[in-house]
Length: 294
Image (cartoon, rainbow, N blue to C red):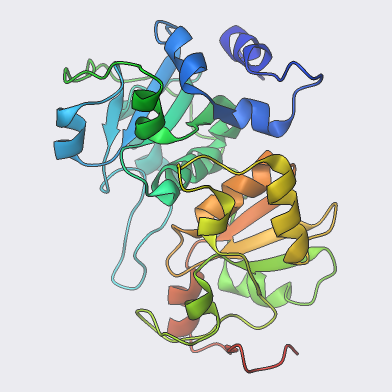
């Protein structure tokens, strides 16, 4: 259930054209964020490096570097942390049960912020979190100041996390490859999807997957594309109204951008967290661009 601040936030960022859409709550502008910097329940997350954070960040933001909100293993590079680990990491970032979280990129790597948002969604805070459209670059371009002072280190207080079923496994993907209403989307660049260039392990794509490169969901300025453009992209990839999207990439980072974009236009997405790294290690079937769909 949304707390009072979250209700106010949803109203504040709703479009003037009428009823709010999913995007209205999931994406905020620099102007909106600047007007809410003093809200006591706001948590701002700077996704980047310590060096970049120290050069300048949005006032009050906390640093999320590559060691936070994800884990790796000898077999898989990027995975959602176990609930107890994730609970501790989120509290260390100052997140509490009534927090609203705004995430932004230090650089133009759109997928880094969306990966953080994906993990927060898995933790049950999908309705409590938003992306700053355009990231730090847009904040500066809009004339807002940055600071170098680190945010207070006070920890948040969270009840046990209510983990959400946003992650799927190789078995789930295999069992749904031909299930009506489930669309498998490959979020990598077309050259990897087609098997023209091998990356890390294996080449080609999971049988039946359609290509929707993660870079196609945002513009050169780092802003998410319009709802109309995003709906067209998903429709071109075979996604019909009411369908569920199962997205993957190489290790689970790039496809988080596809998952986030889907959420903003009302599509129900899940992410194959092991992605092609896991699929190829299991020596499961793959196709290339020259292999017809079966």
